[in-house]
Amino acid sequence: MKPIEIAKGIYDVGVQDWNISDFHGYSTPFGTSYNAFLIVDEKIALIDTVKAEFTDELMANIARVVDPKKIDLVVSNHTEMDHSGSLPKVVHRIGDKTPVFCSKMGEKNLSRHFPGRLNLRPVASGEELSLGRNTITFLETRMLHWPDSMFSYLKEQRVLFSSDAFGQHYSGFEKYDDVIGDEIMPHAKKYFANILLLYAPLILKLIDKVAEMGLAIDMICPDHGILWRRDPKKITDAYARWSRQEPAAKAVVVYDSMWHSTEKMADALAAGLYDGGMAVRPMSLKKWHRSDVMTEVLDAAVVAVGSPTLNNGLFPTVADFLTYMKGLKPQNKIGAGFGSYGWSGESVAQIAEILESAGFALPEKGPKIQYVPEAEALLQCFEFGRKLAKRTGANR
Ligand code: FEO
Image (tube, rainbow, N blue to C red):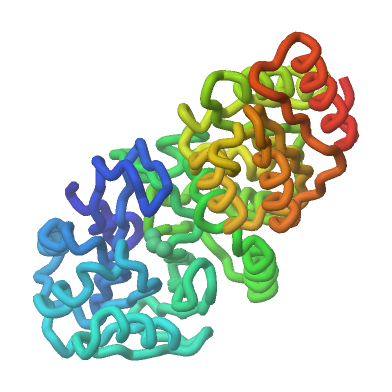
């Protein structure tokens, strides 16, 4: 796309990845973008690069603004390959000695990715770099979400280049929050739930730190998706809310089924949760991707997980989901297992064990039903749903 001047002398030279549908295990039906920014000042700076296969497109975008050889320096806010994959080739085309500013951990990680190929200039958090009319302040944001992550802030124009933070896996011609409107929020929520949730406690600390520093922000430019210019506070407030993980009166019933028995149990349990006052949607792992379920888990008070017993263990999709969810460490949730079985019936206990080890509260023992649930068993599941709802204080 033709580079857009997003602020005075600042151009978005990034690329759209319309066709990516799986971003390391996260479903991206709307694709994504790899945003990169060119600051044209007395010195010309390139903030971040793109995935390796988009190198030519990035260079062509830059060339529509300036001759790439005129770029004086590159800033690498994050080492992950969707932002650094093209870095060695880009630097080679600009000039092999071009300095690449990065965090101290960025120096370490970029060296491990591209040994001997980059002229790295590690910077300390708070260090400034003048480009002429604009000054970049580097802010280390270690473990948000990699050890090397940092923000770059332009104080004169109050623009924050936030790397992955505040991003969304969304590819589109809409460039700004005020153009796309609220439609972008589910994408931002999904991004948070699947990429950043594990680091929620650090995000709360970072938000406090930014408030203490009194950083005025007119525009947030993440490395994925749209830019926040009309209301940057909307996304920072959402991050604070999601990071606090205050549960809503909402339940997720996630399950898989072999012969519809666990499915029937899930539907009855969901009806009981609803009757008990909770918003709820049963989510079959045959239909829903793990990352979509995780997005719903983010603000749920109850997560009920159902699996039949297969070969003395969990159904593989359920095991996959539990591993994924456990890694993201959601907090403040009630969990429960349930499921059908033929003869051995280990799945419900195995689910409970995993949920417990992931920090869920398990106040009620989940139902397990042999073979096919009849009316009485389904009533038991319904009542179980009501009991779980009651545990959250929900009321209808
Ligand atoms: Fe968009 Fe952590 O890379």
